[in-house]
Image (cartoon, rainbow, N blue to C red; front, side, top):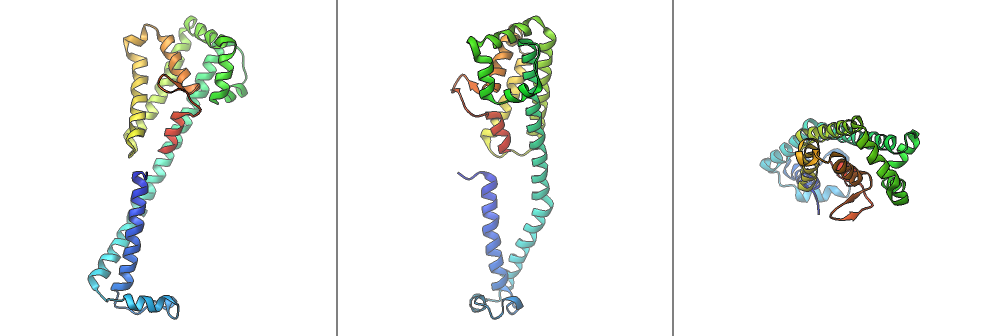
Length: 236
């Protein structure tokens, strides 16, 4: 299935080809010099109808398309790329910073190379799932004992949510599934931070959310081998 942008590109290309044909067919001028004597010259002469309406419409379309690409499409594409890269970096920082918080609660000391390794969901699962999730439960106990660490996690969630909200406000997301995904992500983060049903057992719900992200697991599909958030960011 083609997405909106692909359909737009195919449509523009098709009509551009039609317009180029219209320029040659509708022009009252002889075949351009660099095509004279080529195998295309007889064909163009046969197609020549000398219709000024066809010629003017074709030239108008080509000129309008050129300026639209120059003024709208390419600047918007560049802007979208910048915003997508910003969100990608924010998400990577979110993963690294939340892993650091979990490690500080679970094993106290660690090096940054370990943090980078655990950004891979397979390594994360293997590390925290070992010995019946001994390290994972140590991390949860550390969070229970240190409310500052919980606040640090909430801050990371807030920064991620703001970046996602900025994308939703400033990028035209044509795919409904991608748009709905980011909306649900933002809403869930908001509930985690503010809803009373979550604040009563904050560590339980926060840790569940973080496990879903870092270990690529969810209640519906179970264990997965792909990072859905990363995948959705890449589609922007």
